[in-house]
Image (tube, rainbow, N blue to C red; front, side, top):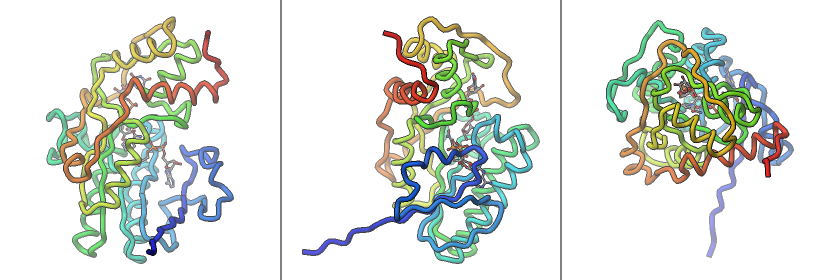
Length: 296
Ligand SMILES: NC(=O)c1ccc[n+]([C@@H]2O[C@H](COP(=O)([O-])OP(=O)(O)OC[C@H]3O[C@@H](n4cnc5c(N)ncnc54)[C@H](O)[C@@H]3O)[C@@H](O)[C@H]2O)c1
Ligand SMILES: O=c1ccn([C@@H]2O[C@H](COP(=O)(O)OP(=O)(O)O[C@H]3OC[C@@H](O)[C@H](O)[C@H]3O)[C@@H](O)[C@H]2O)c(=O)[nH]1
């Protein structure tokens, strides 16, 4: 009996705008791993079978920092990755976002919903950028026969996130560990649905290896208000910490929850890690990096 073993080689291209080499430390030097400092707004000439196109700042504070660069990354970066896919005949997966639904008027969000997005707002570089990226994917698919996969990712969290990333889960955990008040942006009743990173990776691999182009929502339907999230972090990590209300930013979506029927039926995927079970893994990682011991 003989077995065919598929041995993957991985090439990571990153310009380190929000990413960190430190997160890849254990792979550097591995014979089947290669790391390239590369900005996707420039063409990339390599030979590959599959492209996971994730490059894009994702935290609102980072994507708003240089909005022109964010939209270039989404448009020119996606064009370059599609050009690479076309040249070498690779299958390409785009990590799109629940932000394509904008401030959704349909709840929970299904993939057939076209969204409610402000085209000229401060978030548009990101949400409209990802919407164009999805359009480019489908145009390359229809015009050039490129094999595409589109994931619409809902808020994802987990260990090794940048401590000062600025997104809500990392903010609350870092604040709780630093004994700083948890900053709930008003009104605090806005909702998000949080997916643990290992579930997300499993969903993305299933989508890449499966037969469906998508778009497919990948996210955890467990929905929480930001006040509920703050209360949960307080209870689990630091019962003495204060929760304060601070000003919000424009166009913050008021509610978000994925309908994952397609992911369940087409990919056989559903998330396994509940928020209360995922937060302690992130707490442990943040404690180590911040040097904060658990109180006995
Ligand atoms: N984490 C989430 O909640 C979430 C939700 C929806 C969609 N997404 C999408 O998933 C992808 C990854 O998100 P993340 O949370 O890991 O974000 P992140 O900001 O932590 O990581 C993004 C990575 O892209 C790199 N990058 C940014 N611009 C680049 C460029 N021009 N060229 C090359 N590399 C570049 C960064 O250095 C970083 O390593 C993004 O495309 C994001 O839009 C994430
Ligand atoms: O300290 C904070 C930070 C954020 N928030 C609130 O928490 C909610 C979530 O904010 P985040 O910044 O974590 O992320 P958002 O949901 O706004 O955007 C994210 O959505 C999906 C992805 O594409 C991106 O990762 C990102 O754009 C918002 O309502 C925000 O007002 C707080 O209450 N306090």
